[in-house]
Image 1 (cartoon, one colour):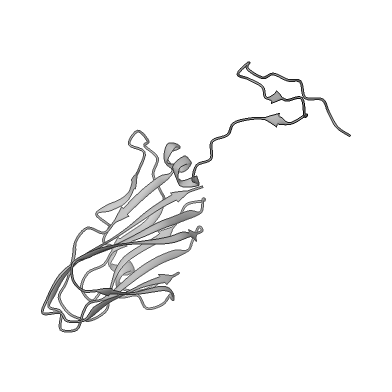
Image 2: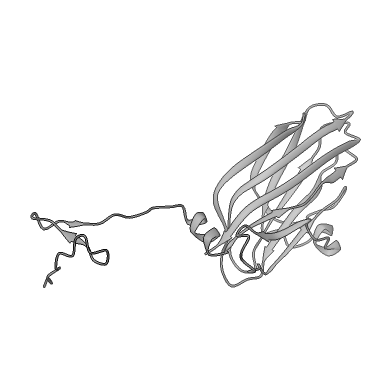
Length: 195
């Protein structure tokens, strides 16, 4: 059973139907994150500078979603400075659902803790988001992304294709500096939105 569509072409409030019975409309397609930003649902996280003084693994980045909406991570950013005495590469590991470790029990807030990307919005996220320090740990969680990065100064943007962090789940990042490192400044960041 069909229904009749009346041609309203040119009137600004209804669609045109042409002589071939084709419905003519114009549409605008945009990434979901752009729409989220316009609605005040897009955010940035950034640890600020963390100085690592050894070549041992340290937990540096942690977000747990406590809100009702899924948190979607579109990009992760790794900013790696000059290493004093370090030789070789840096290893960065992204973890799925870490729940314990000193980065969580010591609870130091990130420098940019869920900053809204819509400058006119007062919306906030409900998250636990912490930055680590030298020798901070995760004691559990599953590896989902691992990257070997040249230890010379670099900024890496990792397109993660939309990691979904539902309520009660979390993401963490560990870094292992280059061999013999005695001083390395790093920063980690994420671009996220909720739907």
